[in-house]
Amino acid sequence: MNKWQIVVMVLISLASSAYWIAAVPATAIPEGAASQARFLKGSYNVITDDFKAVDESRPTAPNNEYTGSPVRVLKGKVWRPENLPTPGPLLVYSHGFMSFHEEGKYLTRFLASHGYTVAAVDYPLTNFFAPGKPKLADVVNQPGDVSFLIDTMLKRNADKNDVLFNTIDPKKIAVDGVSLGGMTSTLVAFHGKVFDKRIAAAISTAGPAAMFTAAFFTSNKIPFMMIGGDGDAMVPFEKNAAPIPQKVPGSILVNLKNASHAGFAQPASTFMRFFSNPDSLGCKQLSKGLENKSGASNDSFMPGLDAAENGIDLSDRTMPCSGEIPATAMKAARQHMFTTLAVYSFLESIFADAALEREAARQYLLQTLPAENAAEVSVTQ
Image (cartoon, rainbow, N blue to C red; front, side):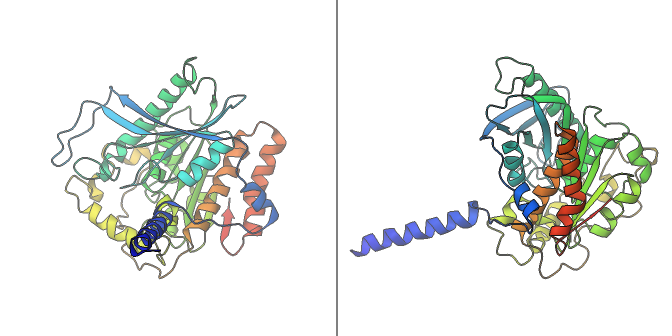
């Protein structure tokens, strides 16, 4: 072997290693036979389609040097099961601040393999590549984006020439999201002015919730689950997630012990897998994002939606990452695994066709999951 062949082999090896680190997620296996069985990939082949939806009824606001637009453009993907025999559930997934629509790919692909159609888009002004830099305050427009996505998906569902024709049950629509996406899901599910009555279940994963009082959740009566990590340095668990069972009767709180905030996102199990705590990087990026001059301060966090009569109290204005960041956190692959198990069992407890399947999923979520993985998971109702 000559020196050039050696150089080529070394380059190929380095490229393979780089690809593995950047694109191939780490994997994990839960404890317990029931959890291992529920974590198996579903029977459907998953098809991923790019798509774009344009809401011509609402504008995108100016943002720093960005002059704005008369429409809101939503680009993203649909993950769908191939050859679904009967209509199944629809989940609209919302990404976090300074993130992107594939943030929860570990979850969206899993759900699609089990018969769910999942839609996720880059929100116009809060995604990582937003024009004028990500703008936190645009979260007030994202509930409208979710409703428009539901409109779009149901329209496609009724179109005989569309690949989504007759694949969605309009009575089985849910929302989920991480961080600001979790807050978006909470707003569109419960806010008295903007909630969408077509939504039958809602999940917030590490979403800000300290500002939502018990009165906020009375506008709509649907099943709600909060997933959080008590090691979260960005959206502290004790203020945001822990009070949910007292605020929302019948809700479910899943605590992933020592889990980080950034660990809920897909990149945490790829190129960030070697960080002892992904929040160490996440807090640095978030701090830069909150320096944006486009109106990301607490005073304008939810302009137009933050009135007291809507059950929102902004008196506690603790900034993200203001406390100490734990030195270590739950491995992101395990965080993704437990999040997937919790979301899937929660949705199946509501949407499974058979009553016995719904009850089995509920009992698994409330009892078996925390029993089999007690060192890492607790569930409170």
